[in-house]
Image 1 (cartoon, rainbow, N blue to C red):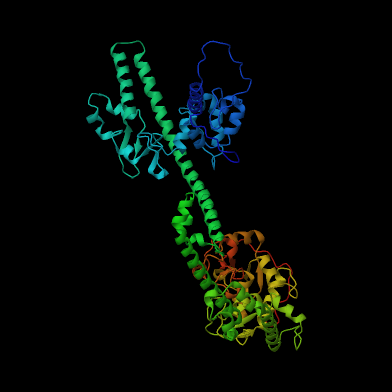
Image 2 (tube, one colour):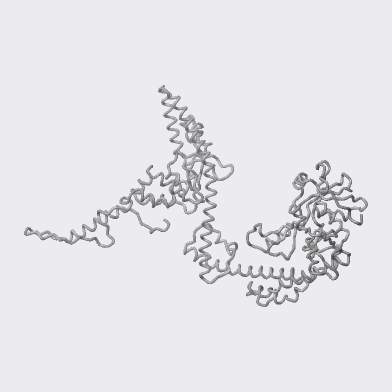
Length: 630
C-alpha cells in the first residue's frame, strides 16, 4: 500500500476470541462467591480491558466499513498484494475469491507496470493473478524466491519448479500406452489435453497426470453410455471432443499472447528494479563522501541486478562498491587527461608543446580535476580566433596574387566575405596530404571545404599555414557561370546557398555516353579534367528529373570517406565511419545518440549517368555569355 499505515490482519477473529477468553478467565477467577446476604451494589464504573487485549465484541475493520470503501482501499494494490491478503484470514479469502470481487481484481491488474492481458474466460481472476505473479509451484506448492526457479508453462498455464515438472506429476506422450494400458484410446486422451514442453528445442511433450486421469474417466464414462445405447450418447461425446479441442486451441493461442506480455513485463520490471537499486546505492555512496559517481553503474555489476537492495545486501557489497568507485575515478581521470591532450594537439598544433607542462604533463596527474584544465585552456578560444583571422588574410593575399577581381591590395575586412562565396576556388598543391581523399588530392575546393582540409595537410602548423594552397581564377569564372545558370547572383551567392539549392547539371560538351548529372561541387571538379575546347556550357536538369536522380544517388554516409565528426571533439576534424566508431568507443563511455555525430554535408554525391534515364533538360534560367577564356 502506498502512503498508508501497514495493518496486520493475521487471524484477527481468532486472536480476539482467544484474548477475550483469557481476560474473562483471569478476572472471574479472582472473584469469591458470597454466601447469601445482601447483594452488593453493582459498580457503575466501566470495565476496560488491559492494553493489548481485544474485547470480545470487536470486529475486523473490513466487516465494519462499507464494501465500497474496502474496495476503494484495496484497488490501489497489485494482484500479488491481494493474493497475500487472501492468505491471512478466512474472511478475506472467502470474500476475495468470490465473484463479487472480480471488478476489484481487474482494477489491481491496471496498477501493474505495462498493464496485463485480459483474463481468459475459462479462468477466474484470482487464478489468473496467481499464474502471472505468484512464484509458487502448482505441483508441489513450494514458493520460490526467483521467477527463474518457478517457470511458467503457458501452454498448460501452470507454474512448476524443476522438481515438479520432471517428477511423476507429468507424463511423456510416448509412454502413455505403457503407463495407461487400460485405456484403449490413449492417443485420443493426449489429443484432447494441452501439453507442455521443456525449455530445450527438442524436449518431449509432457501432460499433467491428474488432468490425464480425469480425461480418461470422462472418456470411459462416455464409452459406457455408448455401450449402454443411451440416447444421444454419441452426439454428446462428439460435442465433448469438439469443445475440448477448442479449449486446447484457445489455450495455445493465449500462450503466445501471455508469453510475449511476460517478456515485456519482465523487462520493464527489471528496469524499474535496477533504477531503484541504482538510486539506493548512489545515495549510500554519496552519504559516505564519494562524489562524481557518473556512470559507475557500468563498471560495477551490483548496480545491474534486478532486485531490491536490503541492508544486509549493502553490507555484503559495500567494500566492492568502494573499490569500484576508486577505480572509476582513476579511469575517469585518465580519460580526462587523454581528452585534454587531444584538444591541445588538435587546437594548438605546433604550439602545443609550449603548454604541454601546464595542460597535460602535471606531476599531480592522479589528483587532476576538470577545473584545473579549464582554467589553463581559457585562452584557447582567443588563440583560435587570432588564427582564423590570420588564415583569412593569407588566403585573400593568395587570391590577389592570382589576379582575382574585386579584391583590394592589401585586402580589407570587407573582402573576407568573398571567401564565403561559391565562386571562391582553391586547390591543394601538396602531392600526399596527411589523410588523402578525393576532395584533398589536388581537387578544387571552396572555402567551406578548406575548413577540414587544413587539418589533413602536412604543411599545417600554428597557425595552420596556407603555403599548400593555389587559387584558380579560371575555376572561379567557370563556377560564376554555373551560378548564373541557376538564376543566382555570383557576387552574393554563398556555398551554403548552392548546397541548399541542391540542383543538378550536366555538361553539354561531353559525349552522350559520358553525360552525368552532377552537383555544383562535382561540376567544379569536372572542369579541372575537362578539355577546354570541348566545353559548351552547363544545362540545369528539370526539377522532376532532379528528384529521380537524388533518389538514386549514394548517400554521403554510405561510403568509407571522411564523413563523420565527433561533436565533443570538433577540432579533430572528420573521420571515416570505422575511425569514428573506434574513437567513440574508446573516448566516450556514455550511450551514443545522434547528437554526438556531425555529418559532413560538403562532399558531393556520386554523379549519376543520364543515358536513357532523364528526359529533355530545362534550358538555362538566365542565358549568359560563356567565360572569357573560352
